[in-house]
Amino acid sequence: MIDTSNNPDFLTAFLQYIATILNKSENTIKEYNYDLNHFLKFIMHHYHLSTEEDIKQINIKNMSIETIKKIQLDDIHAFLFYLTNTYHSKPATRARKIASIRVFFKYLANKEKVLQVDPTIGLETPKQEKRLPKYLSLENSQKLLEVTKNEASEYKERDFAIITLFLNCGMRLSELVGINIKDIDFSENKLTVIGKGNKERTIYLNKACIDAINDYLKVRPHEGVKFDSKDALFLSKRKERISNRMVQEIVKRELAKSGLDINKYSTHKLRHTAATLMYQYGNVDIRALQVLLGHQNIATTQIYTHVENEQVRNAVEKNPLTDKEFLKKLY
Image (tube, rainbow, N blue to C red):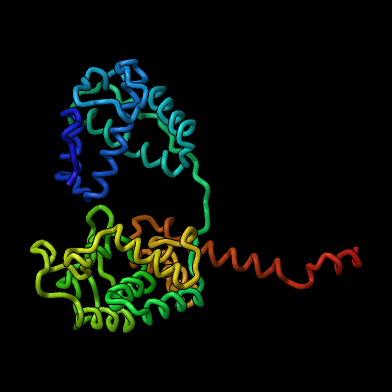
């Protein structure tokens, strides 16, 4: 549930619009709410409309739409500089906030018609560095599964099923947490998940996934489950749908038990691992991988082809004929 009690009316109306008309997910709406709250608090400070020194503590509840009408491109640039200078925010973070601000002003200009000019026209997105995804090697992936499978824990079947789905299917954290038992078609060995933008997609389950799920279902609690969690596949100790944070803790714990760097790997890195292993060892077509991962743009998926290219580069660099001492003799 998103708390909008401290929002000005025009911001709450915008959030309601993107929830009901644009059909954005709850997580996306939370991000919009957070980003725009931060931006509007900065504007209050920037225009000297608050004496509060800590920008995040500024109250925007009574912010006037007339203040919004004054905002220009330079003010948005000032906000981005503030993020960089104060928080050393990464280009990806600034790009996300820009995306939120763009949609907000487009709504005010085109839907509500309260702005004559959209101040985000001409607003550029920060250039982002292309980084290769971090992922577990095949050997380390197998080790993680073995450790989780063999641990002495009351919840080992659940935890093993979670790790197995991450490493085999490449699903997102929110997708895994949101799985309901009825979403699984055991006759067809497939699963329906709700991805980004509330988009539904099908994930096909291999034997490892089906076996892990069935083993967990044999011990999954049936009595005393919270009413709103009766359909949930994965349950917590309190017999309610497992939370994102709990899954993150489970993955972190199992990584540590496997001797893997918990500062380097996470639930999202397991998604990268699944995609990378499928591409490297499964001879998976890049388009098929795009569908499986739920990427809207194939350019997002193509980062996994870069992983292979980097391995090729490393292989060439490790050629023994590049040995410095040998090259000195030639030259």
